[in-house]
Length: 362
Image (cartoon, rainbow, N blue to C red; front, side, top):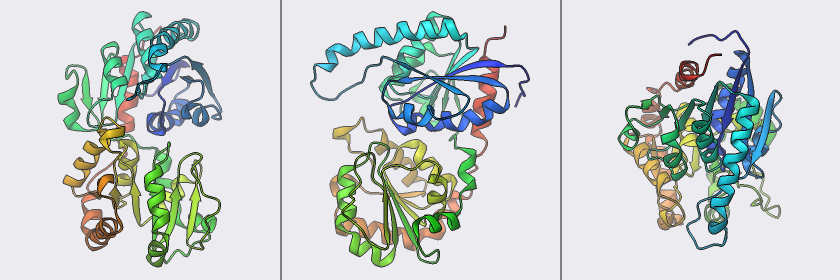
């Protein structure tokens, strides 16, 4: 990896979900070490604003952006005009900030930024986490110089001349988690198994309701950490072996490290972090009726590799859920042995090398 000594300007973008921000969060400390001035373009009220704005040394800029909806809405008529305004705002920001490169993690906020990158002749790199690109990245990819992908199979869905398979990018601090700190925070017994349930940054109402309905049975075997999603915490529900949070940031590494088994949606960034930590997982992907099916494909790949068990949300019941947990308990040693063969610490350096390769030099 090249070491940068001069002060250079980089513009990051991506948002809509935590998964579209996590790679940028992993990059920011390393970019700071290399002397980059860092600006971030996100939406006015997306989760990226909550995650990025508090970071010292990173300047957050909000722009107008559209959103793809799988239902009829007047907003679908307004959105093209929002995107056009976002392009105008992005062009103005690029002219003002003069970044040497733009790095995009995806989400619809990135589309006007990547179009503006092309219009201003600013090199841009895109990272795609999922097996198949989402609509936002499909739109944005023609405007990028380089595409980095997490799954090798993704190469067949993108311009292979531009694309490179690098594997999963995980946050270096992920490996600094402490089970002892987590148990102190949660008032849990470190000798009793811990189950962590994570529904994603926007939550999982159906999954949340199911977990709560099975709490007595679950807590007979596990201590349960439940990340519910924003606004989905139930403060009326208390149990000595159950702790719930809407969202955690600083403590997340400790909570992940403490878990013996993880029940989760199947967003690529999250499940690759579980894999990096060698955590057996039961994946309940977002069903296709409310998504484009990317989580279903991600989960299938992990199940085929022997890293996870998968349960369709439509098949979720007391019987199917506890049958899958029992399978994980029986196969936990084999699952973790397969995971041990993966090294997730190198991909982030591929990203940095790509940034160095494609950035403009004044």
